[in-house]
Image (cartoon, rainbow, N blue to C red):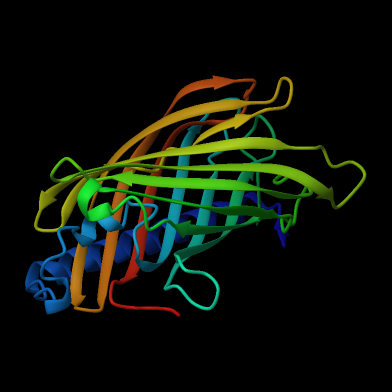
Length: 300
């Protein structure tokens, strides 16, 4: 699917942001009149708040996220890019010959990108990503407040336009970790390395990149939290390819509707701190996110 009409792409961006803003307002209105559901007995001794798990890349939590990063200011163009991202995080208990908890995370995106230096844009599908983290049982996280996971990271060439993606199949390792030794504070990160190994056309360019997502959250109480979790650093290893290092800051809240169902809403701003060989990249981005949480759901 490729839509080159500027009006269509702007309409998609406005509609997606309106949808997420409406969901945020509904959640606030609902939460203002609803009392938080009591924690189940099985979690009475659990010192990890649900509002902390939503940021933690290795927390056992099934969720479905809808995120809209909107960029009103971008280097090298007058266009205003937008992304609608749908991501599921499926938490799986050990089964068969896999003695570890698993976090399977597929991600699909519809992106609106600049056609050049002007305001014209193209809206299309982006490449699909798949992450599978195996959470290690050692060291003992209750004693050390530290846990980590490792697994494969895959990128599939599903983009419907040559303006996004690079027409290659990519694979590599991923590593995630989290430290909760300071009360109310979660320090974590997710690293993903992708290297191309097969191509959809002879004009495809080999790729090798590392993405680093630093994640930090601080609990304010009553399921409110501050976070820095939306900025992703990208380092392309090939000669004279781009490196970008943004920073982000925002806040969010978890709205508890039942013991087995909750809603996470968040809003953040993202700024480009450093860029090299990236003439056309984000300068400032607003991130809107709504996530449906299933804290009691076990998939095995």
